[in-house]
Image (tube, rainbow, N blue to C red; front, side, top):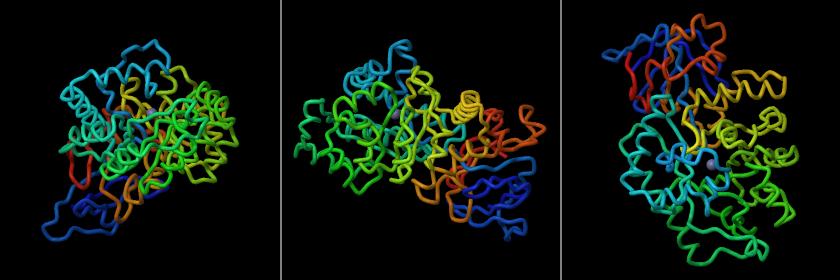
Length: 396
Ligand SMILES: [Zn+2]
């Protein structure tokens, strides 16, 4: 397929090309260039007036709690989503699998309509939880990256004793690792150093919540005399989730250890738990991406996430951030963790793309294409979404 006369955010740096052609072959971008001409019998689509950009990567979501939208809206973070005592756990346990599955499917469909083609999910409930998500998302044109976890948490007594992972749980972990894309560790406050180090040895992607609240940082210092982030890094994570209350030295440590940081600004705001300081994170050299976190407390919409993060950060710090930096957080920065085929449009990347209407009434005249996408575009300005070379939403 040859896409002609399209505007493009190209490559890892999202360079804006006013007009070019893109050849898609099977699932991939084969070539890009103004000089490309159609092969005989090749399907040609004229995309004059459209801006082609990478599909969004939602780098942190708990899609499993889609059934609990806005339940207990006024309660605090611990009573809502604590991995052991939160009432989210009760909702998941007491819901029928078919109901959980339906609402997970709906969230997948909702994300495609909003241009999200890949999501990284923190899946609770052990292997069973992983299988519910796999089953719910099967046949839907979206790429779930499933980070599972074992049903095991330690209290502060076991953490202080540096209790190791019980043998039976090592067996559970082994079969979990075989059946998902990575480990989604609830946080360092639920595990001893020994267990976190055991997680670090698993040959699979690892992500962990860290410094989401002032309270979680305080608990870590009280129990272990270390910050939550210092301990989270024992698991050698590819991704640290939140880091809203990480200090400058924690952020520098994260950057030195090549752990990416996923910020979830609207979820933090919704829980009355602050705003991540992306200026400080960028200065520390962290690779930043964005997630929408629990569907229970926030909608899986990267347009809204970018708009909120951009403005709230500038308002708080009285310093401008380039809209391109924000857009990269929602797309291209994810390639560093997920491999070069996801989050960018360049040769050999997956053909996961959004086609934005440049002449939509909300966007025209488009003087700054990055700003237009970051704070004016929405689901309504999408003409079509492509996943692995197929149009899966909208049409030309
Ligand atoms: Zn989370």
